[in-house]
Image (cartoon, rainbow, N blue to C red):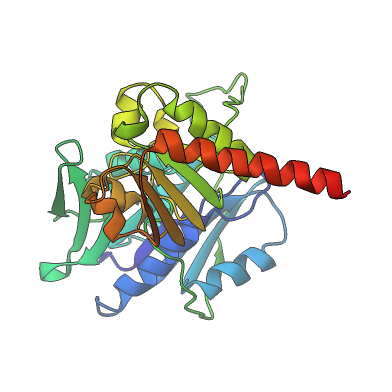
Length: 337
């Protein structure tokens, strides 16, 4: 069968809500569809036996032409044995031209398993997707430690790519999709992995990908009590703490907090860059932010060209002053009460 269509793996949160990255990819697939003749956008949903009316409605709003649903009550949570194999079987039954998944732990496992089974290529952690020459998927990703970006054309089908959350903006492209309930006997799937226990790690920091406010520290904050001040301000603003690649390499943040081409792409309503110069690698990770405030003692730092508000000064003087103002306002409010 000739490969046709763009297949998107739909990922869900613990309470079975569609993760933003899936809607972003579905919307991007609908955009790619406009550049390739006669291709359909397919969404693959794997989950328990429930009423999928609301999920179908949501996926239709973001550009799905077809929605393939595989349901079984044993699929209420992501299963390392079942989900990758089920998705691969769907990809074999409805051979797509392109397969897209989120660059999440779940999405990466799905993508790598499927690419291996289908013996095709996979471009990971893409920062852009387009259609290139010969109507091939053009995948852009960072290389050489984020110093350069590479445009990659995969000539084997299906063409596969993983994309981080918030790289694209989810745009509504309402359609009336064809819904297909596909039955797969999961009893026949070999169980190679057994999940014994799940331990949630609590770092004390808010999730940088979902927070409305993110305060990020760069090389300039990687000394003295720079990040101590950032965490203190974040607590008062109910913000998440993030950082640049330099901050990660020096051990001030975890990999989950790193922003940029080699880290996460985020889209908070407010992004506060503290001691960050504004290199292209970092700016890629914050391009969809609402408002950007930059604090840097170098008045010629590139970050100021992209900031809505720029404060040229020493962060070790500015942050304590901001924190003090918060404390003063809080005391005044308490006295008024």
